[in-house]
Amino acid sequence: MANITIDGQTIEVADGTTILQAARMIGPEVAPPTMCYYSKLKTSGGYCRTCLVEVSKGSEKDPRPMPKLVASCRTAVMDGMEVKNITSAKVIEARKSVVEFLLINHPLDCPICDQAGECHLQDLGYEHGSAKTRTDFERRTFEKIDIGPKIQLHMTRCILCFRCVKVAEQITDGRVHGVMNRGDVSEISTYIEQAIDNDFSGNIIDVCPVGALTDKTFRFKSRVWFTKPMNAHRNCDKCSGKAVIWYKGDDVARVTGRKDQWGEVEEFICNTCRFDKKLTSDWTIEGPKEISHQSVISANHYPANMVKPRELTLNNIKPITLIAGEIK
Amino acid sequence: MIQLTSRSKVVVDKKMSFKEKLYLPAIAKGMAITFMHMFKKAATLRYPEIKREFAPVYRGMHVLKRDEEGRENCTACGLCAVACPAEAIIIDGAERQKGEEHLYREEKYAAKYEINMLRCIFCGLCEEACPKDAIYLTDRIVESSYTRNSFIFGKDLLVEKMDDRIDISKRKKEYHID
Figure 1 (cartoon, each protein chain N blue to C red):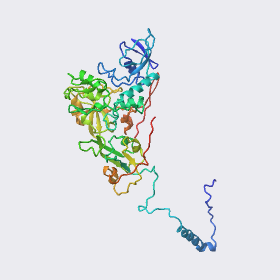
Figure 2: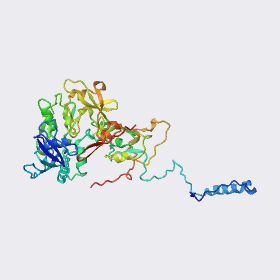
Figure 3: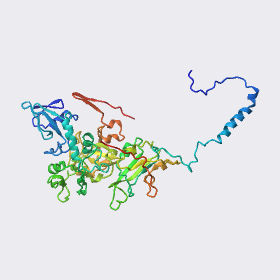
Figure 4: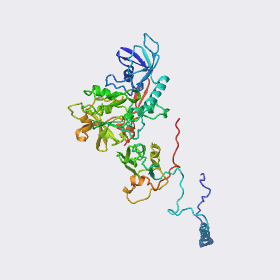
C-alpha cells in the first residue's frame, strides 16, 4: 500500500495504481482531465498529455521532486508521494498549451458536429484553453470516410487518442483499424476503408472523445441537448443490453453505452442494440439518466428531478448536496 | 399628507353661482383649447404610409441571413433554440446534398426553422447565441393576424429574399477577445 497526497488530500492506494486512478478515487475535484486514457481499455493513455501533473515530492525515501511534469495516467504512485494538480501554476500553464496543441488541427466546426454538447475537447477547451489560437498555418483536412454502413470517420476532427484503435484491438476480434503514417500526417484508417463487421465495432463511437467517429444513423438528426436520455435495458444475447436511449420527442434518436462521471462507458454494447433497436418497445425503460447540472444537456428544459443536484465540495469536507425541489 | 402633484384641486361641495350654472364661459374655454390644437404639430403619424424611424437597437421580427453569394448562413446548430427563454424556436437539421452548395454555406442546414411569434419575447438572445451570423432581429414589425397558426413563422417568412436584402449592419456587434 502507498500513501499519496494529491492537492493536499491524502489517500491510501494499492501499489501499482497510477496517480490518475488515485486522483479519481479522491474525487472529480482533483482528478486531471483525460483525452486518451480509458480505464476500460488496456495500454490506453500516454498520448494526449492533458493529464500532466507536478510531482513535488517523489516518495518518502527519495523526497526530491520530479524534474518535469509527468503524465499521471502512466505514472505509478510511490509511498509518500505528493502531487499537485490544479494547485500548481506550472500544470495550469502546461495544460493550456496542451489544449492549444490539440486544437491546432481541430476544425472547430462545433455548430455542425454531432458530438457538440458531449465533446470532451469542448469541455477541456472551455475549462483550460484560451479563446484565441496563435497558429497561422492551414489546418489539415481530410475527406469523410464511411467505416462500414453505420459509422462515419471525420479525420479532420481526430486528435489521435488511439482509443478507437484499442477498442478494435481488445474488444473486437481481428483488428481492421489502426493508425497509419507518422507525425502530423498520421490518420486513423481501416486499411482501405474496409468495413468493420464485428458486433462490438460500434463502441468506437462511444470511446471517441471528439466528433471524429460518429453514428451515421444519428447524423444531423438532432443536437444532443434536444434529446432526452433514458436508462434502459433489453435482453441481448451478445452484450449486457444496458444502454442509454436518447429520445427526440417520442422517437429513439440513438442508443449509446452508459457513461460514468469520467465519460467512460460502464459496459460496451453490441451493434444490434446500438443501431437496430430504435423502438421504445425494444427496451425496458428504467428511468431518466442523471445529467450533470454543468452539462448543456441539462440546460434544455429538464424537469428539476432529472438534473443531478449541485454538489459543493471543499477540501476535506464531504460533499454537501443542495437538494433542489421539483419545479412545477 | 404629501402633495403628489401641484395640479390637484380640493373638491368642495358648494353651490354653483348663476354664471357657473350657465356653463357658457366653460364651454368657450374648452373650445378655445380644442381650436388651439389645430395649429399644433400632430403627435401621431399616418402609419403605414409614413413609418417612424426605430432606434438601432429595436428588436422586431427576425431575419435569417444569407451570405454575399446568397447561401443560407444557418447551420442548424441549435444554440438559438437552447438560448431561447421562451422556447419559441424549433429547428430540424438536414445534410446538404451534392448540387446544393449554392444554397447552403455549410454541410448541414436547417430543413425546418420555426419561430412562434406569440411565444417570442423579442429578447434577442438567439441573435447573441448565433455563432454563424445567421439570425438577427430587425426593425420590422410582426403583422397582426386572426389565427394562432399564422404566427408560427417558417423559413419562407424568415429567410431573407435575394432581391430584398435586409440591412443589419447597425445591429452587428464587434467582439474582441484577448
